[in-house]
Amino acid sequence: MAQIIKMVLIYPRWEKLKGQTTFNLPPHGPVVMAASLPEYVDVSFTDENVEEINFDEECDLVSISMMLSTQVKRGWAIAAEFQKRGKKVIFGGISTMLHAEETVEHADSIFLGESEGRMEEVLTDWKNGKLKKIYNYMRDQPPIESVGPARRDLYKRELYNHKGVQMVDLFHASRGCRFSCYPCAVSYLGGRVFRPRPMERVLEELATIDNNRLFIVDNSLAQNKEWEMQLFKEMIPMKKKWISHTIEDDPKILDLAAQAGAWYVYQAVFDTSDYIKERVKRYHDYGIGVEGTILLGLDNQTEDDMKRLIDFLLEIDLDLAEFTIMTPFPHTKGFDDFKRQNRIFDWDWDHYNAGQVVFQPANMTPDKLQDMYDYAWRTFYQDESQESKMMRLFTKVMMKEMDDGTWKPRDRSLTNKSFGKDVVRNF
Image (cartoon, rainbow, N blue to C red; front, top):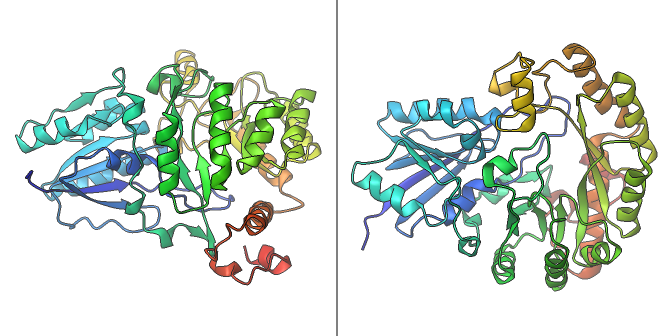
């Protein structure tokens, strides 16, 4: 029998944006990695966004999983604390890959790429005192069939609710993306290939998730119509209620998505065209809510363009809107262009939170772009707060759960099944 290895798995905190509704979702990357560990690894998990780290916890090895650029400096500081105590620290996750050259200076080892089928090698090297500084599997992806159910048993469930309302669980049915959008690093991280998980593995994992509310975190569900339709058909009997990124703009697919429990989608709103207006209307026609994702600071945007876009958002009946500032994350086209043009003036990764200007915009000053970002949030939510709009979406999904018999008294402040003004006020 293999020697038991005690691993501490850490997800670093990051500073939330001022003025926005703050809630914490159970992170996905760490528990996906944990599922790839051999059985002889006893792993404990700490999400620093909801609990304190015990730096004196007994362990053999520390693993730090980072997703966001705003986590990297905190991750480095966490590593230093454990290293002071004589612990070996290995980093992994998306932002480890994006910031590998710097992170390796703070680590005993960094792991780049997907972890399925790879961790045995890492742990064997550690046991033999031969831990490599870098394990790079970014261009050597494991078979997608090897991706199993995430280790959701590691979550401390009571920490993931917002004012008594149960938050969603994260889940993925595919990896990769065939698109290569300007502000996105996905093509660098995994290549421009759509890699759907076998449907039986998808259904196997869905069956293990007790939470009825999901966020399907795939980069886009609109990658392959036949696969998308099959996924929704298979999900219909499960009666899940879910959020996702874009769904194919096709009546058959939208109808299946609605039957499968589509709750609301994130839809990029990049202009004021009739296409966008009709796109949002079609989602609503099928009972699917829409959270518009709006990127400010692109080179083709002027101040007047942004104001027209914000006015347009108020006309098209979005359920929610999320505004972000164009941010040149490493290994994106935007980063390459702005760096070459010498337009990046702030290299503090804590500021790379999509809410702070770190580059010189093409058509205005950095301060003006920051003002327009604040103006966008303030204007869109001037008549009804973000929390109130969020509660309306939660109210709709809870009513659907009650209709189909899947509602549970998981929402502590709502166990009387009252969804009136008091509920919205308390949210």
